[in-house]
Length: 211
Image (cartoon, rainbow, N blue to C red; front, side, top):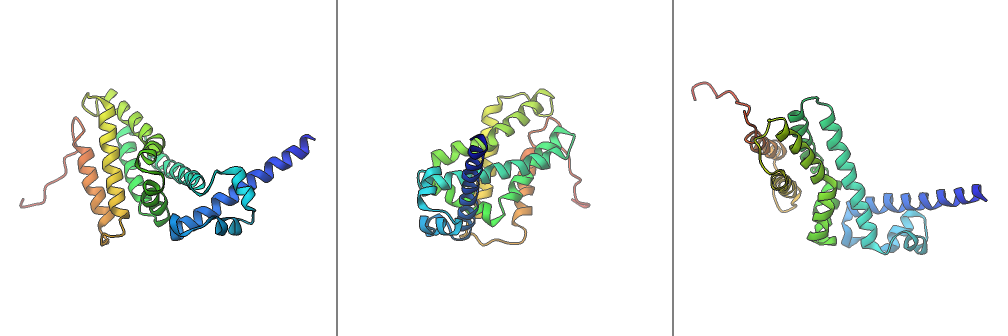
């Protein structure tokens, strides 16, 4: 009986993975509004009843896909930060990786374009805070404690920086803006200067000769 139950559990897990994989592919390719449940179950090779066993409907399925994408971005940010021993380099590397990840068309569509539109700004913001703001708060708390960042309340600072990065990412993802080859580099340069201003002894860049 235990073996049979284990097989059923694995089958349910496979069904869920197939639904998430195929719906993510479809949502990323054409957008939430252009994809129907019938297409999702057909691509996943499951029945509509199986879908409703795991999810309440298309919006609930999208919510799970969005959470998966946010976790993926969080892992990328953590891995980029983890390549450095210096806490300040960890912060800047993580912030840069977030911006880099936001230029991925699949992540743009699901996390930045459709996410707020489908779930509403309030729920999207709550999910975003759970996925990334906590880590940013922890990093800033450590930097303040170490004296790298001037003593100040961390919560408002974390929200301000998170908002700045989300706005930069949304701008990079905006299909209405004419992207140039230097968009990401220019955006990161602006953010890096903003971050550098928080340091108790900001990095001084050499002035051009003759300036």
